[in-house]
Image (cartoon, rainbow, N blue to C red; front, side, top):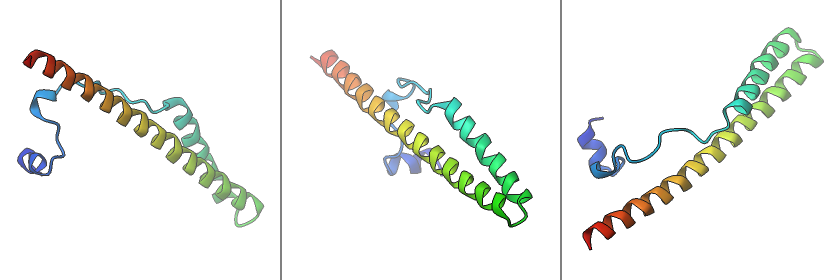
Amino acid sequence: MSIEDLKEQNILLPEEEWGKHSLDTPIAQVPVLILFLFAVASCIIAFLGNGNTWTWIGTIVFFLSFFGIIILSDRGIQKQRERFKKEKREFQNQKNSKDL
């Protein structure tokens, strides 16, 4: 997609807001990394379980860690959305005060 296509679909911020917002992520990176390592280890355990009990334990741990990653990522996205709304209000207030 071109920049013009993104502008037409209102996906991009207005150009005057470019570079005004922070780009860091609010997602808790260490817990996500730990859950990722659990997911990888559980895949290995499931594989080595050879269809027995360890396979099921590995599968259950994999799905729990998978859903944990999803939940943590979603919380981070919600925090970022709230921060963006706050920054947007502040930007609009500054713009309105300059216009007066």
